[in-house]
Length: 133
Ligand SMILES: C[S@@+](CC[C@H](N)C(=O)[O-])C[C@H]1O[C@@H](n2cnc3c(N)ncnc32)[C@H](O)[C@@H]1O
Image (cartoon, rainbow, N blue to C red; front, side):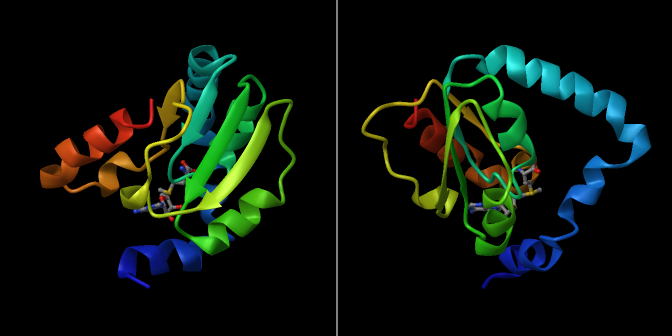
């Protein structure tokens, strides 16, 4: 397991504490409203879904959410949550190995993954996401 993957594996159970900080509630609410307006009725691919915090938000308004992460431990937490009314599926996959989907998604979303992409890899990353829609 690489260092980065190990980090999220170890933090899986405490990860969502970042979303409980009082000073973040205003911004988080704004982000939830924005996301729900953008993704309403859409078939969404969510990359790096982590423990499913944004999956939950999305599932309230989307048609479907396919949520992916390469970390089994965060996915285990995500899978225990209740979602809907959207249909929600999970997949353990490294985002760099995503295949072109049979049916393109309407939207690709990835919460807090941008800062993990090396600047020199951004063009490849963007191309990879473009192949999904
Ligand atoms: C900062 S957390 C964000 C989790 C979630 N999107 C959120 O906003 O709460 C980053 C997540 O990206 C996942 N991740 C990092 N690199 C990845 C990769 N190459 N493929 C798939 N998932 C990855 C980690 O396992 C971790 O769950």
